[in-house]
Length: 211
Ligand SMILES: NC(=O)c1ccc[n+]([C@@H]2O[C@H](COP(=O)([O-])OP(=O)(O)OC[C@H]3O[C@@H](n4cnc5c(N)ncnc54)[C@H](OP(=O)(O)O)[C@@H]3O)[C@@H](O)[C@H]2O)c1
Image (tube, rainbow, N blue to C red; front, top):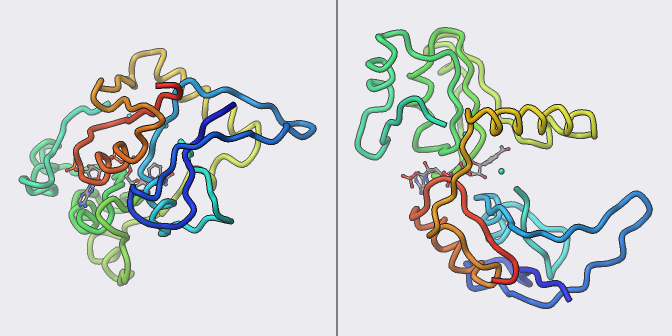
């Protein structure tokens, strides 16, 4: 008998249930896999809360998977100013921003002219109501709001992206250490969501089935 986390109504972490579950038999061309460790992503909290819709209730949960040259604490430092200092006044050609609303403008201010703003998440809330003129004012900037599924849609794209990722992990360029206090049992999904949403975590979190 398998176990899964499911929920029958949108809400806080308390709606998550750890239940017995019988997966349907795989159809032709499908395989069944046993998860030994499950990545937990911010997106899971959006699916749970209803920010991202589900097809039907009860719904299962779970989708999922970076090094730093310098770190800036945006809670206590002026991001754009620190970027200027760290780059000897050059600023950067591209920003990857998953925080969203709170860092949108500072991220634009960190870009060189004609730089690329990759806004890929909304941990502090979504970026809305943007006046496109701001891209002109801050240096003829480009913006994209991407997600994985706009890039990986077939086997060839998956092979290319995953082999690039695993090569970077194998080379040590990307480290995937997960601290012990961010490894939860699958039955502790509520606790994991509370930790993620209360900003107690840093980097990856895992759910371990059978723990
Ligand atoms: N487009 C995609 O394909 C894709 C892929 C992965 C993730 N995402 C999205 O990116 C976002 C972050 O995910 P992640 O995996 O990067 O999470 P993460 O590793 O937990 O990082 C979240 C970041 O957001 C900050 N943050 C969290 N809550 C905040 C709040 N209320 N106000 C201001 N800052 C806050 C955290 O800062 P502190 O450390 O100061 O708390 C941390 O820097 C989510 O919206 C997720 O859905 C998108």
